[in-house]
Structures are given as structure tokens and as C-alpha cells.
Amino acid sequence: MQAPGSTTIPALDVNAPDFSITSPEVHAAREESWYATTPYGIAVLRYEQVSRLLKHPKLRQGSVSWPAHHGVTEGPFAEWFASWILNKEGDEHHRLRRLMNPAFSPKLIGGLVPRFQALATELIDNFEQPGQCEFVSEFAEPYAARVIAIMLGIPEEEWPIIARESVTIGLALGVTIREDLPEIEAALKNLYAYCDDLIADRRANPREDFVTALVNAAHGDDARLSDTELRDAMVLLIFGGFDTTRNQLGLAMQTFAQNPDQWALLAEQPELGRAAVEEVMRVNPTVRWVTREVLEDFEYEGVELKAGTTLHLYTESAGTDPRVFEGGFDIAAERKPHYGFGGGAHHCLGHFVARSDMSEALPLLARKMRDLQLLPGSEWLPDSGNTGPMRLPIAFTPGN
Amino acid sequence: MKVTVDMTLCEDHGQCAIAAPEVFRINDDGHLEYEGEPSDELEEYVEEAADVCPVQAILLGA
Ligand code: HEM
Image 1 (cartoon, each protein chain N blue to C red):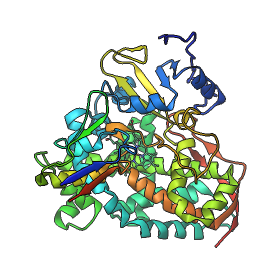
Image 2: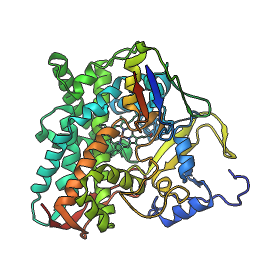
Image 3: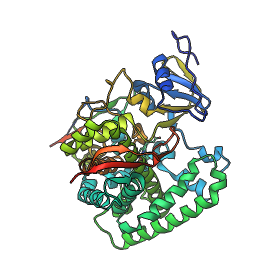
Image 4: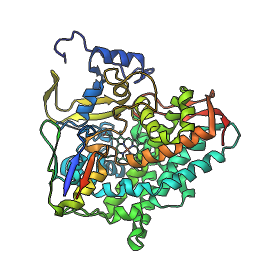
């Protein structure tokens, strides 16, 4: 895989225990070439190519064979995984997307903003100690889970069920998926029962809410969502919306702790909340790579891409590409869009919710937690795939 | 009805082409093409397309 006019194509050992996808090594590779080779395929490093390849018609989303690669080919988890909208392409994907999109419309989500604000305020005001918190367990996790409870219209105090079962199902994305399968499938069963009840309730008692919008979804000639499709989709929404939001909030605190003047600015100008979310997701996205798989052989920028090859599109590397972005972290700057929510047909379905809840949370956090100081004792997911802190102790000066 | 897409914002994600394929389409080069004056019967779908656009680049007029 040699690009014309270039002598070496960098190789990244993404399996090395200390590999970091945001390292100087990766950024140096980006200066040599728009892509690097990896043991799994190729890594795409520059903004322009990430943007194009995310949407390329000769590529499909790349995670569909994950369970099969790890020996899980049948049973409840394999079936649920195959049902994901993320793992569908073409007409099947488009039908699901048309039916699910209206429930996520910015108009419906806008009505939830006061609840997001009240929730953020409540969580911050209830930190156990003044001037100190463990950000993940005291804020990011309950916030992300309770936002989903608010969306689904379930009692907010039931949020630990969402958090617990999502974390268990998340084991399926690790290499020990086979060993963890019984536990994963038990969690799945619990969430199924939960969602079945919700669906039945909204069928009987429709409301002006998200689940009713999904249950009643209709679009032209598209066949309506069956009860099985509804529950499969709802469990995916719980699973796909929880840890991403939790992790992204933790990463935002990391970035702002390194940029105290920007944190102070956000406290003074809460209307910068939206821009703050975009700027954080540009330089510190939780979804570090998005995968695509080559459907048929084709040539792209002089490189022969063979059917079955996996492409990892590096979001942070694209978001900090000096060809497109000036250096630095500046929430008041005009920037091109980042790809932290992916792009193309599979562009994040929940992005209006995620953008809205995070852009309410960050300015409130900035106002009430001045002078951030990261304390020792943080714990992190590996810096690849989906990342973020699992524990993030922070000291701060209480604001009002 | 009138449809205008702000091409300085458009990122060619193609969500509009999923919501209202009669009006929006991604061509073989991966770029958006659209019908600027679709029939009023398509209004519901065009509105949906405008709603779901990730970068909110679609403007609707009477
Ligand atoms: C900060 C929070 C979030 C981030 C960073 C995020 C990121 C992403 C990314 C990168 C993709 C594209 C994956 C790909 O193309 O391979 C995606 C897709 C998706 N996201 Fe999100 N997401 C977030 C929140 C949410 C929420 C709150 C929900 C739902 C409640 C959600 C539901 C989905 C779904 C259903 C898809 C698949 C869409 C499709 O295949 O058409 N996400 N997300």
C-alpha cells in the first residue's frame, strides 16, 4: 500500500500496551501521510480524508462482524447486535433511520432543556464535600443516565439500573466477550423487560413524549416498527447514549482543567456552552475512532483499498489536523465541524440530545466549580476506541 | 414550496436524502443535489429532512 510520491507509509502498532491514539507518534505520522498501516487495516489521520471516507458509498460501518470475530454467532446478544441500526446498511438502515429520527428532532429535545438545567444544578449542589468531587460518580454518570431516564420518561431515581446494565452490556465490546456472555445476556434481558413495559404502557397511554413518538413512528410506505424492533432500538439507545455522554463529560473536564482561562470565560459567558461542546469534541472526542469496512475493491487517492479491509478514522487526529485548524483550544473561535459524532448515513442519531444536555451542563459546572484542579487518583480507559475517565477526582473553588 | 440548502454549511452527510429521497440526493461524487421547488405534497418529508440535518443547513420557504 504505497502512495505515489511518498517513500514510507508510517506503521502504527496499536496493540502496544502504551499505544495512545492522541500521541505525538500519531500526530507525526499524520505529517508523513494521510494514512498509516496498523495490524488491523489502515488508520486515516487527516481531516479531509476522514471527512470523505466517513461518507464514502463503497464503505460500510465496520463493527458488524465484531461478535462473530470473537466466536459469538448466535444467541440473544448476537441477535440484538445484528438488529442495531449501526449494523444495517442501505434500505434497511434508511427505513429505521426515517422511523427513529422524528423522536430525536431538535424541537422535541428543546423542551427538555429546563430539566437538564435542573438536573445539573441538583447534582452539583449535592456534591458530598465542598470544593471537591469525584466527577465521574458524582456528576458524569448520574447526569448521563438520568438524561436517558428523562428522555424515556421513566422515574429518574431508577437511573442506576440504566448505568449498571449498560456497563455490563459494554463488556461485549471487550475481547473477553465470550467469557462475559452470560452476564451480558442477563443484563440484556433485564433491559428488554424494562423496555417492553414502557412500550406497552405508551401504546395504552400515549403521551407527548419520546417513547410515544417512537411507538407511533410512521413514514410513507415504510412498515411500522414492530414491538421487537422497538425494544431492540430502545436498548441500543440506552446503551449507546449512556457511556458516550458520561465519558465525553469527563473528557471535557480534563480539557478545561488544562485551559483555565477558557473555563473562566465559559463561567462568564454561558451562551458559549454550545461552542464549548464542539471545541471539546474536536480536540478530545470520546469516540477516538470510527470504523468502516471496504465493500468492494476501489482506489482512493492512489491507494488500492481491498474489499474486507478495515479503516479506522481517527477523530482527534482529524480534529487537530494543522492543515485545517490553528493550534490551541478556544471556545470563542470559528471552527470547521469535528467528527466526534461520526458522519454520513450513520451520523449519531442522538447528537441533538447529547449536544443539548452537555451544553447546559458545562456552563453550570464552570460557574459553580471555579479554578479546576485535577487531583491524583484518576483512572482511565485505554486511549483508543472509546475513551474517558472512570474516576476523576477534582478540587475547585465553589462558585454560586 | 421552496427549499434552499446553505452549501457553505452542508457536509454531505446525506441525512436529508434518507428522510426525503424525492427531493434530496447524494450524487456519485458524494455531493448533495436537491430540487429547489418540490411539490407541496412532499412538505412533511422535506420538513423532516430539515429537522434531521446534522448541521441544520436546510431552509424552507413558502
Ligand atoms: C457525547 C455523546 C455521544 C457521542 C460522542 C456519540 C458518538 C456517536 C458516533 C461517533 C456515532 C457514529 C458511529 C459510526 O459511524 O460508526 C454514533 C452513532 C449513533 N449514536 Fe451516538 N453518540 C453520543 C450520544 C448518543 C445518544 C445520547 C444516543 C441516543 C440516545 C446515541 C445514539 C446513537 C445511535 C442510535 C447511533 C447509530 C446511528 C446509525 O447507525 O444510523 N448517541 N454516535
